[in-house]
Image (tube, rainbow over all chains, first blue to last red; front, side):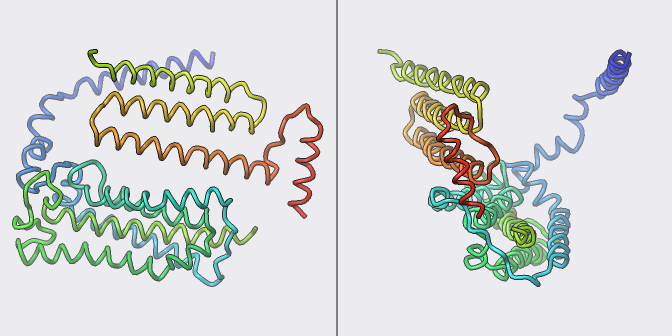
Amino acid sequence: MKVFLTAIILAFTGGALFVNLGSIPDSFLLSHTASRFYREAVVTETGALNTVSAILYDFRAFDSLGESTVIFATVSGIVLLLSRKTLPVSSAGLSLIVKRTFGILTPFVFLLSVYIILHGHLSPGGGFQGGVLLAVITIIFCIIYGSSFDLSRYPPQRKTLIETTGALLFLGVGIIGIALTGSFLGNPSAWRGVPGTLPSAGSIVPINLGVGLKVGAGLAIIFYSMIQKTLKRQ
Amino acid sequence: MIEMHLFISYALILLGCFFALSTTIGILRFPDLYTRIHAGAVALTMSALLITVGTAVYVWELFLSLKILLIGVFLLISNPMATHAIARVAYRHRIAIPVSRDLSSRQKFEEDNRHDSS
């Protein structure tokens, strides 16, 4: 009885979804609305090949500034809640094999994150994704080598400095946009270059770099603040 | 003589698929965590290496093949390391007890754990 009722409800819901989604005129949406504008205007107006990155960091760059402010507020709240009263308590880390292997692998993680950040206007990726990969390095340090290693090699003051540098880079690009184009976060045409090459796409590259530094350092601060509390019980 | 490297790459990829299949059967059929993870470490690394080498031969361009081989090198380094870490943690923190007909290895496991926890 229950199975029968579930089947009836599922069939009804599926039918309703099918009718509603089928009634959308898809060719009209693709050819007459904002997506057509983006398809035609992205390369000529920004010089970026990655449409998502162009929309995030050029057409809606002010929105991305808001998102990175949200990350900043989150980091501030977490650091305020888990304040640094106690000394970081370190575990001894994993075995020697794991430590040596990550000694080989961690530079490549860093290289991959820098690649994803700097190629954000050419290939899938960008500041947020590469920044998360940057934060992975702190997680590797804390878990594999113990959090005292992370404290000595990559202290919280330096993380805060990197995060602030990223935020100031974002704002500085916006102010340079005022000076060169007349609007906040405008894309100056002198920086645009040849589409498809690495130094192109105007202000998208420095904004990607700022967002990447900011997200990487911010998530690293969040992880470090949490692990120094949770490891204390052991 | 046409496309000799294609035959080689197909053979390598098929061999890699055989090792992946044996990995799956091993993970499903072996009795406890250590033997299962042994299947995941040895045979899966072999299958990943064979498939990456086969793909590199299939592509047959110098830089693209080198990039694919680099992926294979990373798999060769990282997969045994990860399985080593999992097995070591499971042994030292008594998460899984080894299933064995041999009584002496069971006793050795108990003695190691008594020594660790003290």
